[in-house]
Image (cartoon, rainbow, N blue to C red; front, side):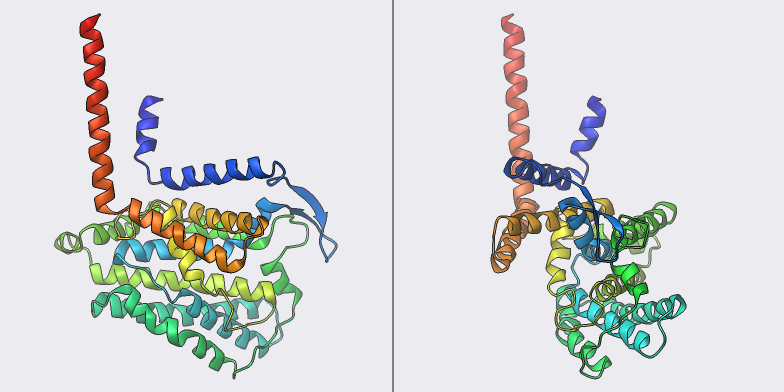
Length: 357
């Protein structure tokens, strides 16, 4: 038990689990019924689960998926992609453009998704080339698509905000008849499992960490550092396309100005809360997903407390600052020294007591 506890203290999941525990305790004290679940009938006459927990898990689906890709980019490139919201708008626009030109069936939805996926991967390849080949800092490189992405999405559908109506899209963005859990939650679970299996049974995770920890050493050991960064940005493109298509399916339209607006800030925060260093290296996909749900839980909690949407962003900014400062080398070094002093002091007191006895 003691060994397990010592191992857990060193785990990257300590921060997200501790933050989640604080949030749970706060909500239980504020409102004991905050986490209650109920079975209700939705507008389509289906029996579905409802409650704050379902709302948190459902609303954070797009964020959780993007956080997975952002984790890989952060780990390998030591930076973050701030264009994910704009690229999601591009992928969503391509998705809608294909759907509007055909009768909506499952094969057409798959083709539309693949089209959006290709568009997002190309955007990821563009960002990856700037970062990996031209050595541009990730936030500066992705600033290009952050600025140009939504105008491109606007152009794809001819400057309109088209709608797409189909019960099949409702199955993706809402509920599948007979299944009481929202489909986006199931998509997150399936996608997280696939990514975890890929990282577990391939060298992708190990190589990503190696490049992020020490790129020069990784190259000397035969790892293609440029290729790993490039691949990380392309994988983020896949994540962004999935999130964008879920967002479109929820609303039944593409609004290039509001689709996943400001989600890049939440994705970076999810990675940080997940115990991942924003300076790259060792990472935890599980931590980032938990971080995404913590952010959504925090958002819903603040809204329940009648906090304005503008103030919610300020609170999130405070959390980011606190996490970045606590994770900085200066603070970490100070905490290690403080821990060492306390440990030595306790040993001296124990020794003195034993000597006195």
